[in-house]
Length: 466
Image 1 (cartoon, helix red, strand yellow):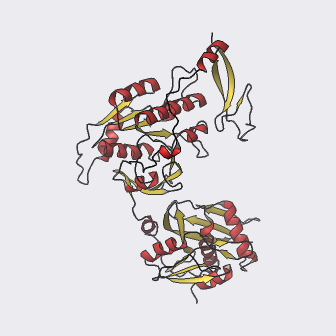
Image 2 (cartoon, helix red, strand yellow):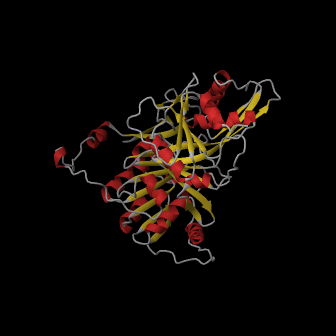
Image 3 (cartoon, one colour):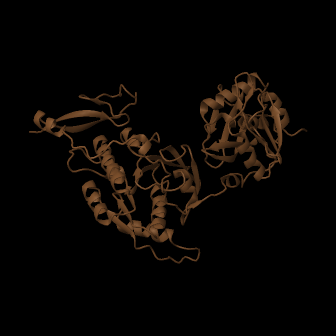
């Protein structure tokens, strides 16, 4: 006879404890322990459940074909780029993001596209069929306001019971299954509520088994915590094949779909979209879009080239300095890491001779993009130096390079791709770290490359001479 007991499970790392803890001893996060009731089977039933009938057959590795996956091609090229070149049959994909950022809208657009050829089942646990239909009508509206016919192969259902969801899928046999969201799905066999650690883990595991067995592609929409991580156990991200995050400032139109895990393609790949009334519109040339509203020859503005996955993107970095009215000057970054800004301002003060100890420093990456790679250090430093001296950076110049604590510049990866993208957009010169080894790097011929060793030399070349 089965017995039940209560234990506490950390929602972030899955650590279990028989009593409540304010702080998880494994991951160190506060207020992540949640209570769950666990069914414990008797020894006889546990022993019987340990016997398995193997249905798989081990094969020699040389007999296994490693041919390229037969991917489903999509019209949304930005979405395909992030997935690695198309949708892989039998894959299970997780997409997360802040509420209202556009997750459901983006997946409904993909569902409408695939439903023109194949069956698609859209399962919602948060919205009614009528609400989804209203959104689909809005997405299918053309410039004249006319709504085109919706595909009959797109099937909608409002359901949270996973057993019922799998029954619907087994009957319909869709090519694509969308579950919105995994936190609202539950298994009636478990006593815990929907969204709990055990429910999310078991539901995702059953959906993965269904995807691998039938070849159905599955998209799961996941809620995020206030820190921006996908809610639920960390094991959820290990179960799925692909983890995508839809990022962006709610007050800006641009959205970034970022891949942080992909078993079928490159990680850290990024697709750029613009949220409009007709849904998420692809931005095929994000560099041009991010620089569209740039003011030429304005002090405090510099152009960096960042690598997002395999794509180089040109972004404008703005810097502003102002005499502080408080005892401690402020350092306020938007789009770059706070500690990175502290390092750059310290090097500017000690190695380049810029007095920033009595200046508030503000740095902003235009367009809502977040830059984590150090290759943008030189552009950030140039924007700050330009604001301090009130001298603009040369308008046709880009800056690429990592800054060291001694004031030296270090080479960034994939420099040829970065310079090639800048040349396509009409930039005439680039300031980069000096090559210590000339082999293996070729620069485009239609851009003037200025190689320097130190931050001071780079700033002398970048700022307009009065």
